Structures are given as C-alpha cells and as structure tokens.
Image (cartoon, rainbow over all chains, first blue to last red):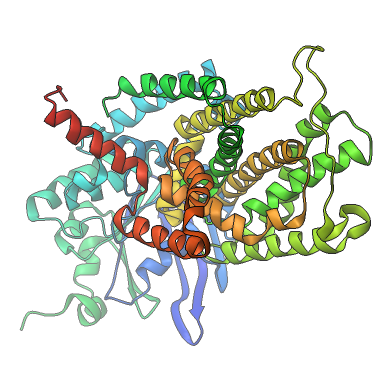
Length: 259
Length: 321
C-alpha cells in the first residue's frame, strides 16, 4: 500500500475479471500513489494487460472497485475516463494509420478540446485559436517525448520505437494525472530503452503518476518506486524493487534463478 | 496535383457546370447532369458515414425516400408552400435517422450495415403498403415545382431548376469540405482508422458515429426533396436497396473519403447506365463487369488515380512538380 502521507492516485480493491471459467484477474488490490511510478510485472498470461484494460474500462469488472483520485470509476464508460485524468498506451503499437504524428497527438488530446460543435465546423475565431494552441501544445509534447520535428511525418514512416514514443506522447496530450504504460519498451533496442527510462522519469517529474508493465527488468528496477507482481491473476508480491527482486516467490514464479 | 491548382480546377468545374445548360441543347443531357448533381448530394452524405467514419450504411436511398415523401406530402396533403416543405424535409429525414442510428451505432463493425439494410427494406415496405398516405406502388403524381422566386424565376423551367440544384449541390459540397478540414472530421477519421484507440483517447465514439449518420441522412433528405419536386412523380421503386447500393458505389468508384471523389462517382452512377443502353439487354451485365474491373484496377477510387495520371502527364510535359 502507498505510504500514509500521500493519497493514492489510483486504487484497486478486490478487482476480479473472469472470462468464463478463466480467472484472468482474481481479487486484486493495490494502489498507485500520487506521483509514484509503480511497476506491474509477472509472467505472460498473469493478468497484467487485463488489469490495464479494467482500469481503462475496456470491459466491465466481474467484481471489485476502482477509484481514480478518490472517485469510483468502475461504472464509468471507457471514453468518459480520460476526461477524469486517465490515459493509457497499448501493448501493440496502436495509432491512427494514415495520420501524421501531429494529427495523432491532436486526437490524443481530444479531451482537452472545448470547441467541438458548430464553432469547430465553421472554424470560428475561438476554434481556430484553440486549434493553434493545441498544435503548439502537441508540438512541445512531441519534442518532450523525443520526436521533435516529426510533426508532419506520417505514422507509417516512423520507426517502431518512434511509434511507441508517439503512443506515449498521444496519451500525454490528454494531460493525464495517471498514465498506464503497457510494455512501452517492446521492440526497443538497449539505447532506446535507456532513453525511455529517462522519459518515464521525466513524466513523473511533471507530476504524473505512472503505472508501467514491462518485461525488461533493468528498466523496471531503474524507474519504479514500487513493484506489484502478478501470477495467475493474483498478487504474489509487492514492495520496493530490491525487496521484490529477492522475494523467493517472485524468483520462483517469474524471475527465475541462475543455476 | 499541385496544391495551388486545386482551387483553380474547382472554379473551372463550377464555371463548366454554370455554363452547361446554356450550351447543351439536348434537354436529355441537361436532365442527366441535373440528376447527377442530386446524386452528388446523396453521395456526399454517404461519404460522411462510409468514407470518413468507416461505417457502411445501406439505406441512403431509403432516407432519400423519406425526404422525398416528406416534402411531397407536406406540400400536397398539408398545403404547405413547396419551398417550406423542401427546406424542412432534410430535418425530418435527419430526425428519422436518429431512431435508427441510436440503437444500431452502439455496436461496432458490420452490424450497422445489416441494421441499415433492414431499415431501407422497412421504409420500402411502408411506402408500398401505407397506401392511404403514399398511394403505394402507384405513386404520387403532379408534385409541384417550388413557387416562383420574387415572381421572377420560374422553376417550371428546367434550366432554372438546374441552377437551384447546382446551388444546393455547391452548398452541400462546401459543408462537406468544412466538416473534412475541421477537428470533427479528424475525429471521424480517427474512428475509422482505430475505433478502440479513439475510445481510449476519450472520444465519445457513439456520439460521433451518430452525428455522421444523421448528417448523411440530412444530405439524403435534401436530395430526396430536390428529386421529388423535379421529376414530379415518386413511387417506392426509386428508394429501394438497389439505389442505396448505387450510393455506396458512387463513393467507392469516385474515391472513398475524398471531397470530389463522390462527385465523380455520382456522375458515373448516373451516366454509365445511360450510356450502356447501346448494349441493350446486356446492359446490366456490362455495368456489373465494369464495376468489378474498376474495383480491382482502382481500389481507392478514380480520384487518386486521376491525380497520379496528372502527375505523370505533368512530368512528361516537363512542368515543374
């Protein structure tokens, strides 16, 4: 659990998700502290991505409760959660094919947009001013995630690592308080992963609470304040990177031992 | 095509459309162009839901029928001025579409196509059998043209009506252009490209899909009213599923999601069957073959192909790119 001084940004209590007889997530409770980086690790099929999807609202819970900054969100539809300060990325690169990086960022920042009606259609002065401000904002964020100067680049022309960074930028464009990263380093080479570490720490420095799923232990150990370990949908360990790394149950289920 | 040339090309096309009835003496051709412009409005509407949003609707002709009958019945049964009836018809059609769109757009994927197909059939059956209102298969005759404008422009004149249709077509094209370049258009394209991600970005996807469908119905209603008061006779046959498929074809043939593709497609859908009359009984077979070949050879429609042809020609003639 988060230390008593800071109120959690995100709390899961007794969350379960059953697909037929499969208990993908089983009575899971943990919380993400404000301005904390929490790692969620575990073997394939242990329920990590399902947990992200439950928090994001892709499908309903079988049981349990989820709170975002003290507000119950489990009954709120997926599209209504980003306006409350929640953003996520996907395990596989999920972008808008045919868009430029900038256009991707602008849709990512959809919830920040106020002019959505007649004003937007007829390009009213307010709508144009807002669009210009959002383009500036998106351009700044592109530079922040390491894609400066890529605004006009079609998504297809970005490398897979750049697409991953764009996915993070697009999520940040909604100005979230809580960011869920689902395997952000997938397909990245060592140098790219090191840059990603710095980016995740920089995101935290901007006051965002981050939950990150990753298989690259070096990255997890470096950026995370705390780690929750899942196996078969259940939490088997929780604690600081050092505590988790030396936990026999974690070594047995996931990390493995060097013989 | 060079960006700066696009407005010039549009102006040239517009000038051509304005001049056409003055130079074309065969009334049959003026009529075909007029019908193609009505179909252009239909196709723009179809393009908003099918091309921009990525949801194929198979009820555009049915919605056109709603607009046509709404305007006709308001003017004949209730004695409304024709202008008022025609102006209100697109709104009635749009309202109608809310009731279909609301339940059917909450699901993703192909269910929407099936629901709209069923809706078109229901419209057809109601028009056929609600004879006390619609006179069924026999149809409604003697639908009036709009009242003269300021006592000056007499719309019983085919050419005057041509310019009315041209005006509406231009306004609807401009509206489509505004929608495409707006942030709303961008959001619709985002839904087409990756609906799950759009939802994760906080887009209330179903609202945007409903908006696109209702907008497409608005266009269809306008086209229906223009059609009814031009031809002067309507019966359900015109508003069946086959015509809805033509609207889909117009979008695909011309260029899905582009602004002028549906214009091109609308002219193709109106003119091709007419020109194929020389093939007499083989007409529909040839039409079908043409469509298959066209879809194979230009999967993204004629407009992108024309653009590439222009580039190639410009290179050969030594124009700077």
